[in-house]
Image (tube, rainbow over all chains, first blue to last red; front, side, top):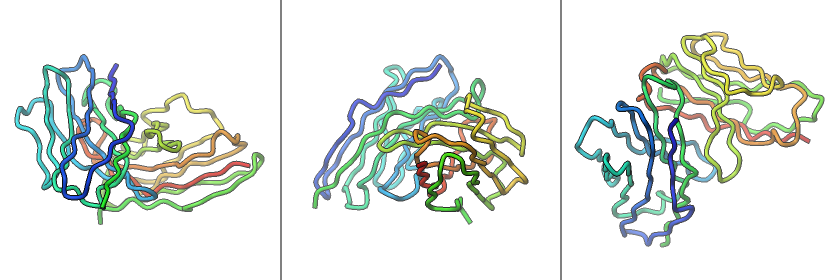
Length: 116
Length: 115
């Protein structure tokens, strides 16, 4: 079984600053994928960034990057130059292509507030 | 078109009513999902359709009945719901279910209130 833990229910950051959201996971699978999804208030959830477990290089998408520590089973999200539009609930998720295919396991989420 | 649409946006129904939620995507995705989400909580998987066939049912009560008429449409039929079923119902789609690593595209959801 997979588990995903987000230990920070709420975080805040000043506009233009950098913030890191934490995520740890546990899986017995060797092949898996990790995701960060963003859900703004009253708007639809979108993918922020995706990481394949077999890739050592950390994924990056513009101002968003991850710190993937496979041995420690850690997958944190760094948001640089935070903008007001980054305010949202962020979910860390994992998925495996073989067992439990089709199921993503979500963490409980972190609500990010961006202060102007 | 990278959009998943859901109708209606809001739905209020009594416990004896029958209603349906609709989801549509035109991205050629062959996996479609229904999730239930309570406020400030992660989405909970309810059903997964893969190539128009029900692949996963997460022990959802029979008062929720999914249907996949074709590869672009997904319905959720509701009957005799309980007040605790009030939630945001999200639809999502992805290229395929079997590889697990595919991004899910989410719709905006239907806000359901059961009186």
